[in-house]
Length: 222
Image (cartoon, rainbow, N blue to C red; front, side, top):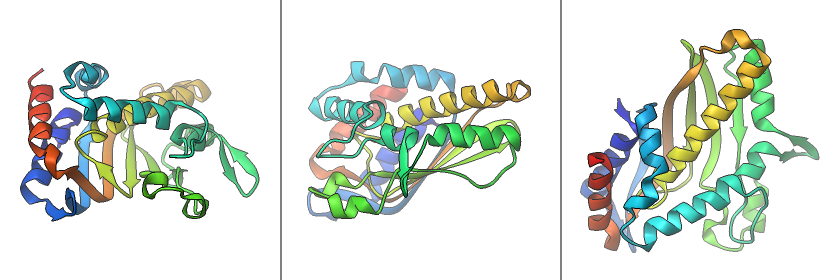
């Protein structure tokens, strides 16, 4: 199993070598990527903008900030952060991180802890093809004192978005672990586990493939 940065490198190589041309993109359907937690990777991911060679990476970073840390929906895209921390389920507003932390603190081995980002109403409110959230759900499991995220995605821009999705998901893992430990101190040994990303479609723009490979190599060499 690869660490996060190595998993990103492998994903770029996979798409560039095995991707099927679909319009302006090279894509792989039914893409799966599993990576383990490494604190050095997280430090590299936080500095990733420094390695940006073009506007694609900068745009990817700005999109991720708006999606994960701005708690209001935009006409172009719903807020992942708002959905995670204040999900409207049939009129009931749920902070999903608090709800999952509460259940895990009661019984760490529970297998029913999931976080939703997608809502069926997105298909009605959609004003552009990319409006429906790319991250649709996160399943949470605690095993052997490791908190694992299993992430379902409808689509993933491997070059300009994947590395930032991984960074924000790692941040969410740490926030959730802190909430669990606050509720039950005896669970303080829980650490971040794997990110298991499964998406219906992973792609790179055909004219960005060489830049993606160069960027992934630079990131791995750091």
